[in-house]
Image 1 (cartoon, rainbow, N blue to C red):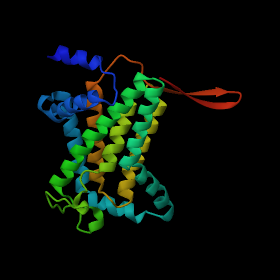
Image 2 (cartoon, rainbow, N blue to C red):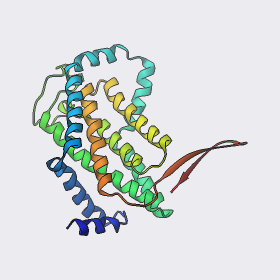
Image 3 (cartoon, one colour):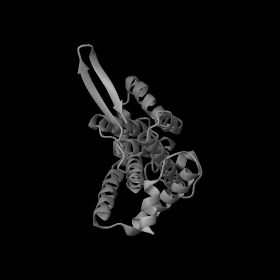
Image 4 (spheres, rainbow, N blue to C red):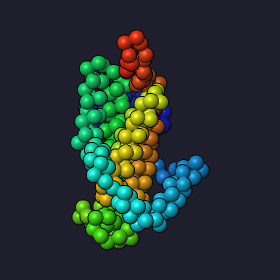
Length: 253
């Protein structure tokens, strides 16, 4: 069975057709059942994330107060832009654009990056929304504090944990970085994801532990989907060149 699955993955063309839905179902199932087969390194990673989450959770109120006391008109103008960039519409537009270019070029690598980005966003959204409804943590803006939960709530005011913007941003950043050969591109996408995540804390939409857990979930899910679709194909490469005329940016795929 494993050999057959490996062969089907090698033959995958990464087009948005029936193949996409078939692999989305397979990859989703693999991600959701992955904890059942975790070994030492995976359990250690879980422990580190849980420990970091627990530590931040204890100081959520203090962290929120510290951040809000330092907000300014300038920081609001900057952070509202990053927060808006965390909107799912922009993420879908980005992967959609990559996919169109990958089809027109044509480029297997760009199509793969786009399709795996779509998968990562889809699975991350399902997991995050499920946890939001299950946990029902009150957002900072409700004034009910970081320890107030209303499980199985379907109101946005109690959708604080985990942060959906942070999860989606890191899922997309990871999907791109996993296919990139460039340190510059990796740093850029993760820095942008980090800015989007921090904007949710700054704008008083989430607690620090919400942002931490969302970021971790997005990264882990996208990383797992990438691992399930490893291929020997050339990755997307970004490079900077210097010439007498100035700097040039080149993309190779």
